[in-house]
Length: 164
Image (cartoon, rainbow, N blue to C red):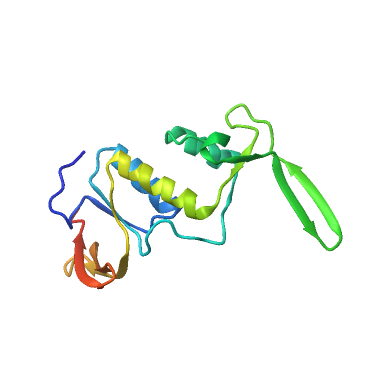
C-alpha cells in the first residue's frame, strides 16, 4: 500500500460508502493504492432500497472475504417474486457454474457498514460524517485533484487531495 501523503491526501478519493463506493475502495486498497473513503453519514444508517442481492453480487461478497452465512445474518433467496395487477410471478435464479444459485438479503444499514469496514480492513481510510461539497480542479488541466468537505457535527471545513 502507498504510504499516506498526509491525513487528508491519498492516491484516490472515493465519495460515498454505499455498496459501489465501499467495493471500489476495497479493490483499490487491495491493489496497493492509498484510498480515502468519504461518507456523509455515520454507520449504522438506514437506507430504504437495495436489500436484495443477485447471485452475481453474492459472488463478489465471497471474493471480498465477507461471511455470507445465515449465522452472520444473511438470508438466502432462490429468485425474484413479482406481484402486480392481480398477477404473481416467481422467477428463479438461473443455475450457472460460475455463480451461486441463490441471492442474498440483508438490511442496508448493516450491509453498508459491513462493506465499509471490509474496505477499511483492506487499507482504505474511512471518514464518516464527511459531507463532500465541491470538487477541486487543477487550473491548468481541469482535472479534479481533490474535494472540499465538512467533517463532524461541527461541520469543520477540510480539503482532501488526490494529486495523481
